[in-house]
Structures are given as C-alpha cells and as structure tokens.
Amino acid sequence: MPPMSRLGRLFAVVAWIEAFTWAGLLVGMFLKYVTETTEAGVWLFGRLHGGAFVLFVVVTLVVGVRLRWGWFRTLVALASSVPPLTTLVAEWWLKRTGHLAEPAEREAAARERAAELQPTR
Image (cartoon, rainbow, N blue to C red; front, side):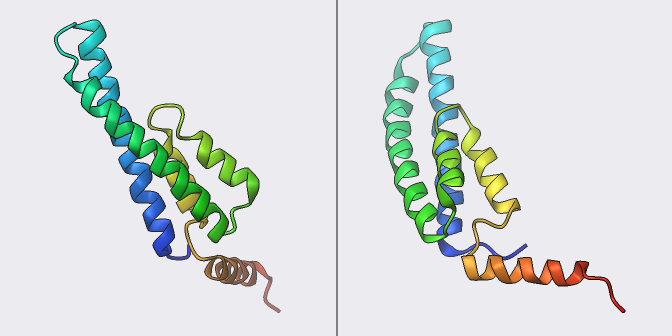
C-alpha cells in the first residue's frame, strides 16, 4: 500500500474531526431530548459539527479532484458525511485501497503488485 499524501492525511484528519463532532452532537441530543438535563451539548456540538461538515465537504471535493478519485469515490466520500460516524468508514476504505496516496504512487504500487503476480519462468 502506498504512503498517504499530505492531502490524504488532511482528509483523514478532517474525517475524524467530523466523526468526533457527530458523536458529540449525538450525546448532546441525548442529554437534551432524553434526559432533558441540558441543551449545552447541542448548542456547542451543533456549531462545531456544522463547521466540521462544511470543512469535510470542501476538503473531500479538493482531495477528490487532486488525487483523481473519480465521481463515484468522491460521491461516496461526500455521502459518508450524512450518517453518523461513517466518515471513519470512508477514510478506512480510501486508505486501505490506496486512494489517499498520490496517483503516481498508487499506480506504481499497482504495477508492483501486478509484477509480483506474474508467474516466473
């Protein structure tokens, strides 16, 4: 697997931040609507998550173009920001498939894997 690029690392960090703020918002909603103890969690994490969501969308579009993900991967990554914590799944998938690396390094790693699979004579 090729090493992550700087943009790939940025995407990973923003994906984790987006997931963390989602989790905080979920806890805040529990405290507000279930236990009816405080609205502070929704107030704080609602704002943080809104900013993290917008940042994730912008970073995903930039990284998708720069690392040549294509429309399918980019749309899946964008869609991962809607359900709670799924940006972590998208980050894991993109890292595991090498799509957080520079395209040239990704292609070189693919050629290397193909050469290893060729039978020797």
